[in-house]
Image 1 (cartoon, rainbow, N blue to C red):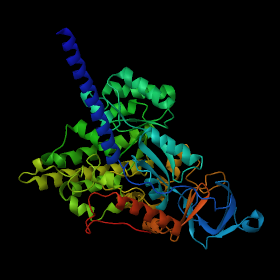
Image 2 (image 1 turned 90 degrees about the vertical axis):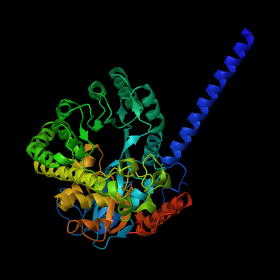
Image 3 (image 1 turned 180 degrees about the vertical axis):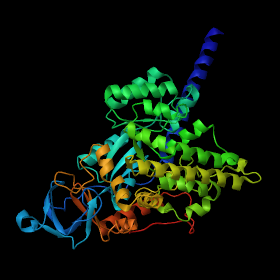
Image 4 (image 1 turned 60 degrees about the horizontal axis):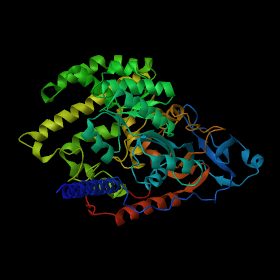
Length: 511
């Protein structure tokens, strides 16, 4: 009997182990697909057609303060770097000439808050819209590989600054689920958080990220460890923390303007529909002090204004919101999946059916309109105080399409109160300095990551869409080549769709 009992126990254990392995494989495969892994990858090989040394002739250059474009001049590019510039360089350079015909040359744009997930095709979208640098905010090992391949000239795409996936605190069961499905870095104790920072730094990540779900003691441990190993701490302000904890931390960047109003909301005690007016008064009363604390503690602020401004409509009218969103650019695994879903049945911001009781639409509209108004009030204060800001879009969350969303964000920044020059600076010079890249300026010694425009964006920020060519590591990508990249991404997306696109939804094509 004992022998049979042991055999039965062994079979039971074996079946459970096999079941657990099978469940893990199924979950991992589903997550891989939901984050864009099933879509065919287009060709992203750099070309060798651009000469190593050439002259961009007769171009108007955005000056270092982003306030004006120069008179037409020549820019010499050699081995992916700006070698020289000035008038009458063509004869002295003794190199092939690419005529700029008086167009407008500026640094390539940086999107300081993106999520590439598993969608390598997004690299092409960023280039097609003039984005030559991105900061990946949910970094995984494959993003480190892409970063290095791009740097080495083996993969065509924007330069990557890879922030490790957010460090969060959960209990055992929730932590296991989050690590499997969201690929977050789960640390249940301060000691684990400390070690995690050290491990991520050793793995080659460019920064570590605080989660909204990081415990207070974990936040303190991450802050101390990041200072100790010399890796930047960026991201959210944990729900368990207050703004005073942010000022006391080693955190060097806050990932959204909305993080500051969330902090004020916690201090306020949590606003609701009935107290929305009082909350806005509270923001008005405290916003200048918050802005000054950002200055005093030398903390950079990412924007994501366009995203937050879309919440009110996405909550109550997803179909209407999709009418202005370029859904065809978004990896269908992302758009259709439940992890970051865009479409009506899976949209992560849409109010669930169980909460759509009497008067729900007005309640949610009021709450999220107040949220956007609070963001605007805070933005005005940090702008007036001179807080350094970097333009970020949170690309790939609804309704922010990679590349395209940067143009939306620049328009949102100007609408919110920035001058076009300030908006351009937030997407060029400021992120170049913060990420310690030699980008963001058209000057000798800087990387030749550039955008050539047909119209002046300082006169109208919407002219940022008038892209004639993009220069990436010195390689010139013409408008025809950029459109070919866009077409290839859209075709790959179409081949992987489970849900056909509604004709009423927005679609983007060549600029």
